[in-house]
Length: 128
Image 1 (cartoon, rainbow, N blue to C red):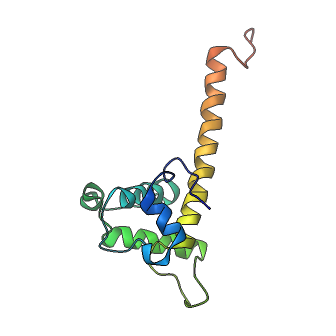
Image 2 (cartoon, rainbow, N blue to C red):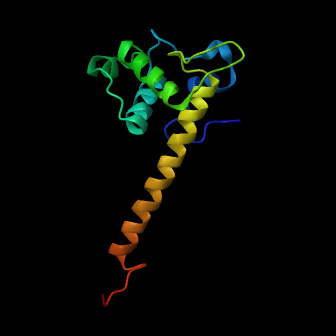
């Protein structure tokens, strides 16, 4: 299984998160992989993540709060050992983020292609 959204695919750290429990993304982590999670949370849930956290690509308190809100909204809980959502991006969370981002990217692509088609004469009625 591999990540398929344009935002996440090709990122070895996020791919590891999808496949390996020790590779969960958690508070205190920093890097491009954290920035990608922040972008996804902003696009999918309009999450408000502190500008300093975003700039540092750091998984700080507002990123953790956004992850927790995302997981609660979707009831992402590993019931084998949890009773409620936490603020860690593990296998289930990265899979959900990736799936939703891929769907959003697909919808955006279709809309852009539809608009382009109208302006280049490829699908509209020129006499209208």
